[in-house]
Image (cartoon, rainbow, N blue to C red; front, side, top):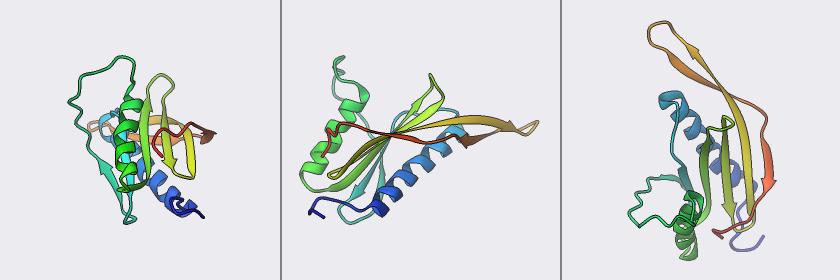
Length: 140
């Protein structure tokens, strides 16, 4: 394995942490903006809070801007892998973009929301079948 490569167990932990956070946000609020997770060089997974103050360039989408931010962190060796989770409302699914030096996939996960409770309604997310596809890697 090359120096920058990470193993499948680390990728699985990063993916799971990002998916669990997405489910929790949907169950709590019914929506969320992109969530960003990184696997730091020390092996710890962190959720990043991104406050973007730069002017918006209409040619660069949210994913491009987040990839640019993460790339600068990868270039200096601060992170070993990253995951960005998008809530795709048009088809009620999550898209998890997982990137590492030796890995680059987008994982689509459809979900359904059910509601429980008469007075205090609670959302519950049920996941469908995962579908992974190769993707370009703009971070590593």
